[in-house]
Amino acid sequence: MADRGRGQAGQRGGRARGAAGDRGASRGGARGDRGDRGGRRGRGRGRRGRRRGEGENEEVWHPVTKLGRLVSAGKIKSLEEIYLHSLPVKEFQIIDHFLKKKLKDEVMKIKPVQKQTRAGQRTRFKAFVVVGDEDGHLGLGVKTSKEVATAIRGAIILAKLAVIPVRRGYYANKIGEPHTIPTKISGKCGSVSIRLIPAPKGTGLVAAPAPRKLLHLAGIGDVYTASTGHTKTMGNFVKATFIAISNLYNFLTPDLWFDRPLIKNPFQEHTDFLASSKVVFEKAAKELKEDEDV
Image 1 (cartoon, rainbow, N blue to C red):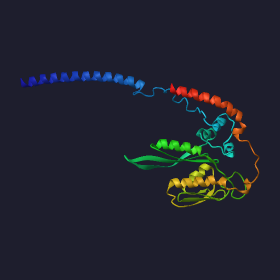
Image 2 (image 1 turned 90 degrees about the vertical axis):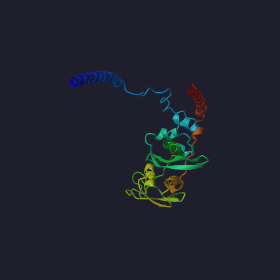
Image 3 (image 1 turned 180 degrees about the vertical axis):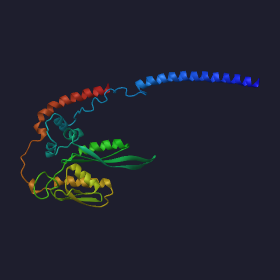
Image 4 (image 1 turned 90 degrees about the horizontal axis):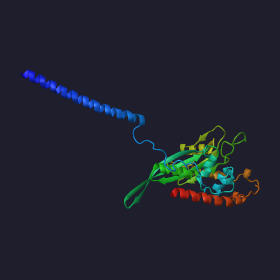
């Protein structure tokens, strides 16, 4: 009797477990169907389309200075025209217009800086960025911000605004393309001093890693360097090298003594265009502001 009772209980338990298993399988199947549906359409919200105004005006440049208007209209053909008349560049898009395809940037250093406030220490990040086209143009930018990405982005913009022409020359005979600097030159920032010395063709860049990057982006192939001071301070080392390179055009050599014919300033030459385009520009700026308000 006891054995028969245990057998019947086992059968009932087996039926109950089997029914529960069937119900679980049906639920699992339903969830599986939903999973298939999700697999076809993708899970999560995904990309819900571009927001209004996003990506539409990324490449559109609305110049706000006289120089910007002349560049965007094609009245100025090269950066050398800007440097010849010492015109201040206040829009980085001007540099992009001429050098965007060739310009390369290099992050030299990112370091945290702190300020003591009443609430404690406020930490921000300082970025040193160098830009150059390896063909006679170099710029250095320094920017501090709460976030690293914002600091790098701001430093790139400031580096473009600070792009300078790099003077190149020969060591001895003027054969082929200029490959070195025309004369010895030095630069100083803080305790760091660096001296650049012309070198024969094939020498390469005999320099520390930091100035070597600047010289390479400037398009200089052969040069000797000698540095003194606390060169471990990367910011001062980079600034001293940039100052030395920028001083190359300040050193007058006999080949720069010839008389240059006086050329009209672009602002004088294109006075009528600037006067007529000012009205058009103000109208476009007004329409853009109304669109942003809407």
